[in-house]
Image (cartoon, rainbow, N blue to C red; front, top):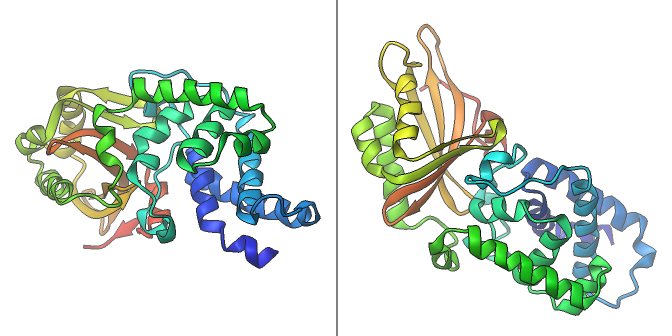
Length: 302
């Protein structure tokens, strides 16, 4: 049974990540799932697949963890009031599941984090995992009618708050050629402190959110005004370097700076970009502590 459960560890991690919005907490939740599955092995009666039984346990582990969190209200920038939100490295997504962008993208995760926990579980189990209403109701100890009601409310929230072009994400399992080109131009302009090019790459209504600090900067001008002092002028931090990667099926870049007198470049943050129509619509900035899950160092020397 233990070996059988381990086969599903990676996909259970993605499921817990969707429920919790935190890569780190998802790891803890999967470990607890494995412990509960081992302790309750005799309760598996074969009425559902073993995989479905594990998902039921994992979902309830997440619900237990979410019970200690305070509810959050949807704001202008959903990601700005989720201090626990973390990115997910694309190279750790299970290849066998072909995880589509629409089910892992940060905008989707941020909105569902604002749903009541059980409503969130219903939405994920029905619309992401594709479970029937009856099976979902049984797993969550709800009635079929309440499952259908929760799903309807959850879908309504998604329609209201997700980007209009979300329908185009469905088939995407990696950044497009256009997105990679925009990322390349973004990195080059950042390293040169080319504010003109950076301005041209941003949509006028672009948004930058920093989940851990719960800050957000609405609009191109606000973003540029925040960047300018650290990139150029007397208060500039120093010389910059970058390492590109992908997170949540989106282009991303880890930024490093070498301050005057230092021998190495220290990690500053990880920017994950949402690009629409060849322009950056959203930047979600995470602290350097998230780089370890991407296999990226905290310091570089070139």
